[in-house]
Amino acid sequence: MLPALRDRLRELCDIDAVSGDERPLLRSLRTALAGQVDDFQIDVAGNAYAVRRGPAPGPTVLIAAHTDEIGLMVKSIEPGGFIRFEKIGGVIDSLLPARAVRVRGVNGVIGMKSGHYQSEAERTQGRKAGDLYIDLGCSSAAEVEALGVRIGDPVAFVSPLLEIGGQPHLVAGKAIDNRLGCAVLLELALGAAPAAGTVIYAFTAQEEVGLKGAKLAAERFRPDLALALDTMPTGDTPDMSEHRDLNVRLGAGPALQVMAGPGGRANLLHPGVRDFLEEVARERGVPLQACTFSGGSNDSAAMAWAGLGLAAGSLTLPRRYSHSPLELADLRDAVGAAEVLHGVVGRLPNLPDFTFLPDDA
Image (cartoon, rainbow, N blue to C red):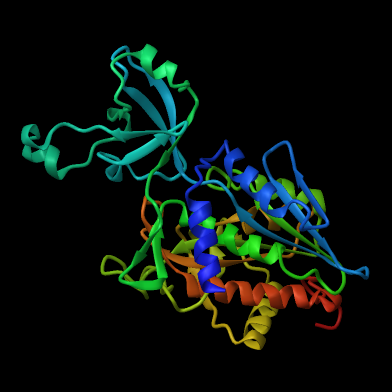
């Protein structure tokens, strides 16, 4: 599965789909899934749903991976042709200067003062995004507009997927978050149908700006179990402490977030869902990294509290250098997540009762 997954990931990462305009990625998914699933729909908010139904009735499981990536948005076009921008999602200001970007298929660069003329303070202190600009090589606003660029257009980073260290399972590039989850979900959707029941493979919109699409997906289908497939940071680099900060390592298997957000404000994992996922992982021989993640959350946090509440959880794929234009992942972790999710789908005829406190407990 690993070579095919790497090729699929490269294809998806090459697509620009900044939050709010996920259409380019949706077009690719529609092409890949047309005629390959029982139903394929795109809702008004930009969620895509690939539905696989078993030959017998049974429970419904929804597995979500968000399609959007962090990026920028055109804010204004100066008379001299330079573009000012806003940040979309968790963009890090200090990583912006001299970064290659793409606007409406046109390559550009985020400008900076020549190093020869920067003061010592300018060289050692990062600049705010509001002070920066995009250079498309145009000398007037009219030239920019002639390219079809207008206010509100998304701006994506340009960082093609690379193999790292000569190891084919290690890759780095832009939008690993969450094109890696999308690549796994796409392979699952193209695989076998469940023996009973229904699986909804949901490619959700605008996760990076508020977990928006997942809430709509959960309320639409009201599944018996909702799972998010996403990526998350690691704590295994020299600038992190694995025990003080985050006990997640690259290449050690998918992570199972038992808590998300400061003090658990985003989500606390349903105990029945945790038991189920750990049981399936053991059966499939996949190690899970149980962790608390105070630095963020994922679509499961929105799905758990959709409608009257759902049994929800997540499998998250470790990645280094989160929310940078070069995120690094180990594809073996993704293969492990796919194996666990295959196991979940295989359990559909006999999915557990996720009542929070069963009568016999």
